[in-house]
Amino acid sequence: MFSQRGFERQSELRWGEKSLVKTCSGDVEVEAVEVKHWGARWSTDRFRGYVGYLLKRGDKTILFGGDTAYTDAFERLNGRKIDLAIMPIGSYGSKSGNHCTPEESVRMLNACRADYILPVHHSTFPLGIEPVEEPLARLEDALEAERIAIRRVGETWRLPA
Image (tube, rainbow, N blue to C red; front, side, top):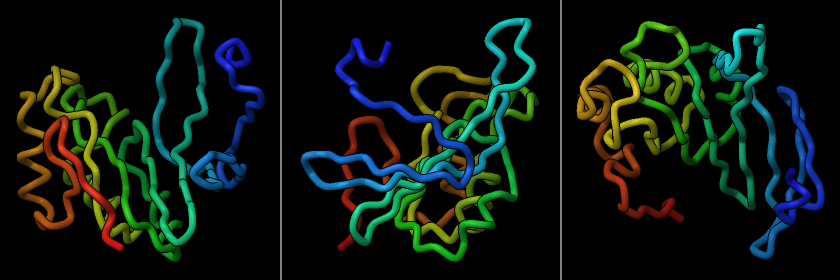
């Protein structure tokens, strides 16, 4: 499937494994990190392994937390310099335990000592049973405004030098 789309090489990473991706803008080191999620797609699914990613190029590191629920796994990343964490803040209203609240996202952000957050899973369409505008409002109440990179779809932001 991927080779038909022009991807010549694919690899699967388990927690702690790394791969180097060569791009025209420079090499990116990709490391799989532990997250907490379960997402059955069929009734026969019993387990799916999920990862987040640390993306490092030069002196900048971005954490993509993926679709995680609250986990203390982010504490293991606190010895690293993480400039930006892309973290979910919505779809928590179902009580499924598959997603984190905005406050839990802030706890994980602080646990890994990331400088900024780019919140995802909010303000576009209903994902959970919470009101669409609630996740961002709760994030803004839980975190210093200057640490929130982007609030609205279409905004741009640049990591400080």
